[in-house]
Length: 308
Image (cartoon, rainbow, N blue to C red):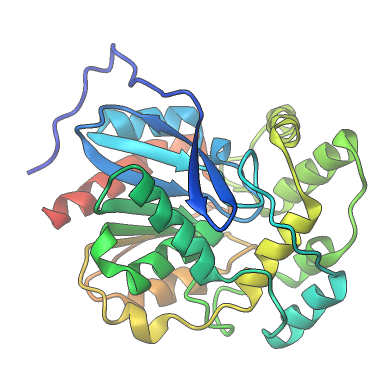
């Protein structure tokens, strides 16, 4: 039975930003939306993205669909802890080329952060929704901590197999090249990147991209943190065999125009998970267009309903 919809005239309650000490000198910043008695849903963001990249309107729509929504900053992002581990660009180049390099932390460590946040919140399990690197984290939670996941939604992500979900070659110089310092340089670099990887069918106005980039910079960015996260991505193993063992409702959403993670990554994810639903969207790139919020919420809701 589907969860009852909330009164749309009453916006879901949003908490203040809160802190969760989760061990190993890591503290995560998080925020919740909606009724704590509703079904818990954990949103996991991707590479270098703070939790605010989960648009507040999207979080409110999910809360209106009967979820208690939790979004958080991954380690090395936003207002969560920075990891004291120096990294070099040559490590990144080696990881791109070989899939091997010394890493300060792994995808399993990032998955452990998500589980520790659930522990902090007193949640035995939750529905997990992850985008891009967040999808990789959510998949890793599902295969390494299966009892903690009620349903899995993987958006614009991949299995870890190097032969699927590749980046368009035009992006590689931007991904591994040096970036200018300071707020203005970050904003302009961000706008240029999203112009390349965003949804052609649902374009964002450059001024909106500048506003979000400025807010992201003000929230806290770490160039070395981005490299550490990239190393975790590039050195992850292939989850395909373990995904085949999952027995939970799963949804895979991917844009056919995604240049950051080719749609083959989503197709392979859905093929690996028994009973997974695959939703591919024409003209969608590597972002979450507001025009598609309703589509995402409906799909996540029906996937969660399968868990009951």
